[in-house]
Image 1 (cartoon, rainbow, N blue to C red):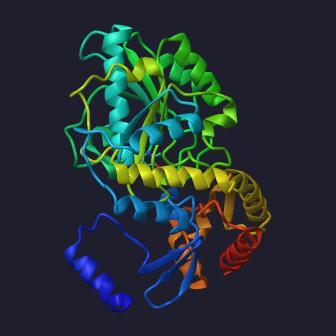
Image 2 (cartoon, rainbow, N blue to C red; image 1 turned 120 degrees about the horizontal axis):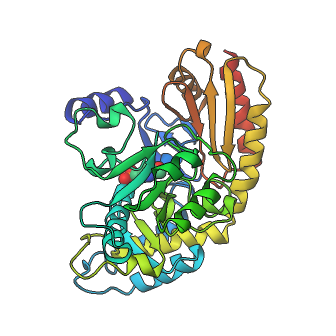
Image 3 (cartoon, helix red, strand yellow; image 1 turned 90 degrees about the horizontal axis):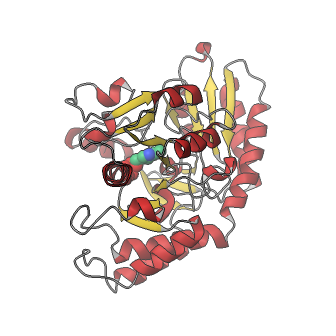
Length: 399
Ligand SMILES: *Cc1c(COP(=O)(O)O)cnc(C)c1O
């Protein structure tokens, strides 16, 4: 089938909850993907940072095939011989005490909300039903009903009520607002270290450190949603390292499986995680041997192949070169590691047309909001590939 036929069939039979670029991909390897017409593209989205390790990494693929031929799913009614090693390796790498395995990112967020609320009632002593969790404006934590209940994006929320109560929204990056929002019933503060979907919004230096101190002072659990920023994207294994802090709960997903399988996790200190008792939370697929084996390989190659270091280096180069582009249509280029955004000015007339032109040049990226283009290639990108990307971006912006 040709591109047009795939699109026609998809649009006829599928829910229209996405507006993808009209490119139908059939193959991927490293930073590259190919469409059904045989055209090759540099992937500058990485499935929203789920393929940090590059497409179809051979070692992750090998682990997946091997495990798939042995045992894929037991449910947690029984134990499996991958889960303990998955816990051990993930804890060692991230300096965590305990892990709760789930599948999608949204499930990790939901799990954190439940865990933090329960901690609030059982350990902090908040009256039942009164727990408050503080979140930030312009947040993105997923698409489930409880999560969109505290979204400030009308598109994510409108028409989906009634909503889950118990959330307080404060402006992102505003430490005074956070302090004022805390009450004796506050159990958690959940925040993205850098807001990805909002357009790579980096908070003022010291914000997370101050938030951590405030949480400690008020006996509040700091939950960092590192589903997008984590696992090397920002040039550190976890973005919290930029501020030298450790969250009480850290959420990871996306690149945790290198894009092969949905695997997410809540990483926690012992005190908080220990409030969960048998039967109080779970998931049929969470912690399954196939997901664990895939994830173990995904973490291994991230470390062994020094992808985090490469993200820092190539990110700095990409950012610097984009910032050097002299074009009045570009309002600002910002980023950390390989999480980069180019914000266009009013007169550029929207980001999508540039994404379409870049697609023609063989570079895939996606607008976020109307006027921001995000560049987030796999962390294995080379200097030559960064330079090639920048040349094309420069050309497309020049018209
Ligand atoms: C993608 C993302 C999620 C949701 O993950 P899903 O796997 O799509 O449910 C949550 N938080 C952040 C910061 C994300 O980028």
